[in-house]
Image (cartoon, rainbow, N blue to C red; front, top):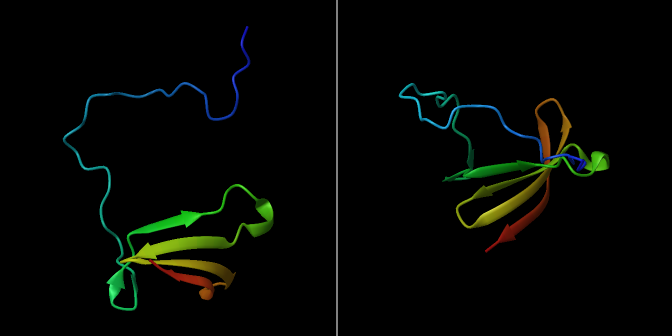
Length: 79
């Protein structure tokens, strides 16, 4: 019998789309005058659990969460 590795588990659910909306907008964030399009959290290395990246416009921001509500910018990349 083949061993099932993490991330290869079967998914249970329905493939038919429902008419009901399962989400709603609760907040809108901006970096400067541009909206944030994506946020990526670090789940790979537990030493950096509080590091995350945001993307807005043509810029990438790598930030670290210090305290409740305190965020420091680690890197700012302009594409």
